[in-house]
Length: 119
Image (tube, helix red, strand yellow):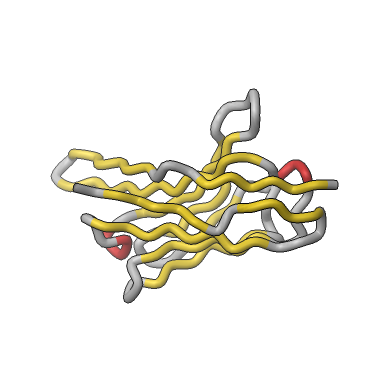
């Protein structure tokens, strides 16, 4: 059974930092594209950051220069370092892993971790 478990969320003041982690069981992150998404109250879930199987990264424009996604294959963990947070970063942050084998795409989601940024 595949599980993605996020941690590291919390309440922080504007300008502060948080580091989110996502630990996987049942899959190897090294074999998957891993992403972070977030969902603010009353809004749709939106893309935040991605790290590819070759460790290439990409970010939403709203977080470029402030967030960094990374992967630790030994710990089977993907992390999101979030600096200079602002209230617009508030939401539930979800970890996502995806790969495609023989034309079949497997997608996995974590349960989410709450991030609240106060002004």
